[in-house]
Image 1 (cartoon, helix red, strand yellow):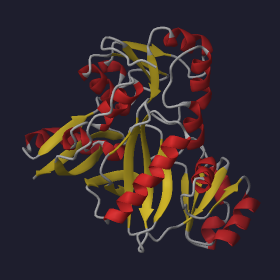
Image 2 (image 1 turned 135 degrees about the vertical axis):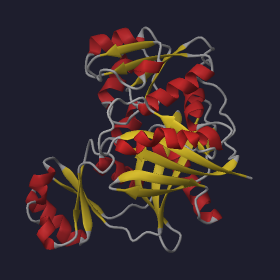
Image 3 (image 1 turned 120 degrees about the horizontal axis):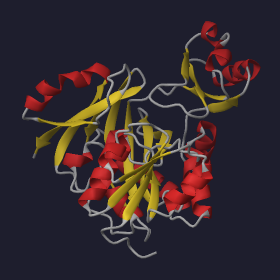
Image 4 (image 1 turned 45 degrees about the vertical axis):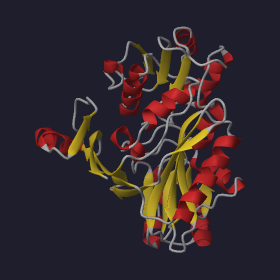
Length: 356
């Protein structure tokens, strides 16, 4: 396909902060942005040229939206894969493709896919009843974590099982088909973020190291404190996934690094990722610009890291300290325009650069 010229319109399914930052990047490259969301007053809509508020299953609205844009992408992985399929059936250009979305939307399918690609995962089992949960615990052991197969993020839809008392009645508390995963005694968690262009070219960002609090990403530092071999292995793993999906755009895989340096895949995200926010100031091309370049058919940009970086999420009321954060000369502040600073809600982030 030919590259999309400046002046074209990028359609984004989803109206959250990732869509907002994608819109900023698209604007920088001369594109207009149209948002399709089921959310009123979304952060992305307020910085975009056009917003359609409709259900993701509304084929008529989706078809009309597709006719107003040149290429369509997603800003969160829980946009139904059927939505992307309907758009493609109507002649729209969509990236990433529905297959990648579908696999990432189901934790059991995702772990199964990793294993089929030769990528290690924690031990896991699908559970659809309390009896199946108990059988899975007997096989996998404790401690373990019970997760919904679908629609879980930022610690939602997860129950930690440390003792047999935690297992009793746990499936009823989960309230949906689940997956039981064994705990990994890991040294650290890392993310690898890479992009694949329409021409098959792949560009990798430096590995970053993540810390979580309450199931939500709290801090990311780049580069990750891991060996060169870990980076080589992470790049090889994500390359296999990108090529197997014939993927176009930015993809992220989170790994646990074990004490022997081996990698265990936690999950993937077929989109730009929270752990890549450091790239806005810390790399020659941000993950957001890179994604727009890829889906528009442009050459991928250089991913060279220009500084060591720390990125901190602002969760809930932490964002209310914006005046203090804005006054810190060593901090770059990003706020997402969300109206209510609710507990557990990502309101923004700050990045600190250690210039070389």
